[in-house]
Image (cartoon, rainbow, N blue to C red; front, side):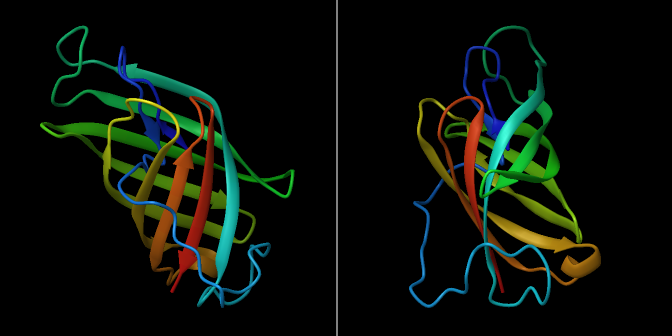
Length: 163
């Protein structure tokens, strides 16, 4: 979910998920190593590694309203590839620098839809929180939030909190 990767001269990542809050942890959270079953109360930890990304500038070099970043990542859990994602982030504010990001995680038992405003990445690591807005298959009624850390321009650590 590098969706917050570099937008031209500015770094941005998709799981663009990018930024706003530090990751949250819960002492009573269920084991984070499951991708199936009943979603409610689950915590899923993933690592997203950038596969492809492109920046689409609106007004040439420099950050402009409407600039987009599109791409996809491979998703890993405990060192095993478990899926992929696709993302699109569009710059919606220049003060502060923010993007609206839409990300879909494709996992073995269904897809999870994620959306929200994320800051444009200026440095690493960058933390973020986005909403889980739905899904398909096992995740068809998914709700909750994702916290993450853009470790560098190609790796993002994700924690999905399904409620």
